[in-house]
Image 1 (cartoon, helix red, strand yellow):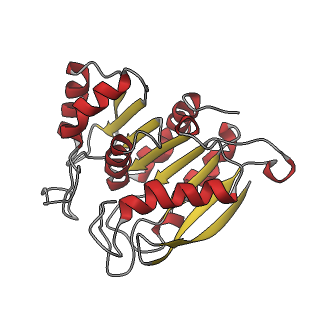
Image 2: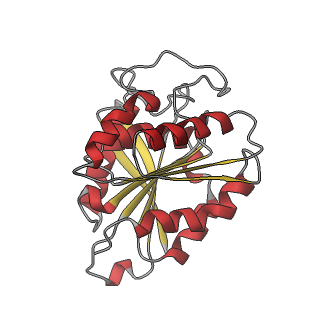
Length: 248
């Protein structure tokens, strides 16, 4: 395994952004192409938060050959952009869903289609993964949220905010249901039973997807909104994502 701190020129963000790229063992001597898991960190955060999940990069090599990409999701003075497009120089959605995959596909041997891409995240990153994944079904075939929420919130996670574009996942279910007929997407999410804020909304989304006939995986585990929960289930849930990706 090797980890590279990629410096990505971004028009969407009006400068440079970073991403941690974790390559599988044997990458340097292989000619194969690999599936990619894009993993979004929680918010609010500092500019180096994308490097902060050491437990994740330790789990990745045990799960088989894939490329793990952990994008920067915040900057100094912009700690909680919610992975949304806000306007010139602050278009995080465009960076994560368009510019970064193009950069990764250009610089690494990837499976260059939605069949080889997953978007996963925890907490605010779980919101980002679900919202961006459903809004960009042409880019991702696997979407997972770990202890996430499903509408844009303030930094406390307790109050909704006015956000641009299609930022409320609950309003996107009919689009997802229609797309499932021709282009299936693996949807999965979980929450800790003792999570102080997000249990009810996760259960709400589970019910809405069931009512719409959208197949999905949902779980509630013992635990709160904490790294202990995420690290203990990381191998199983990354394994789920990989099981639904094209591998060659």
